[in-house]
Length: 80
Image (tube, one colour):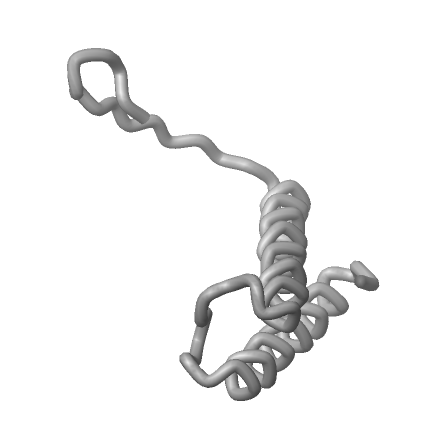
């Protein structure tokens, strides 16, 4: 957290485990959506390399990451 003129302040908060899990799941869903968009754009040839400069290798790696995120989200009870 930054409070004017470049000075930083720290704050410690405690949250319940359920809320923590929900926040993690929300962020995982956000990253999954981003990876899925990257895959579509890369497949269409309109995007630069994400993991590999070779388009086919890049698509394979993107797909692997997408499936990994889906697996982790299933752990949180979210079907994507």
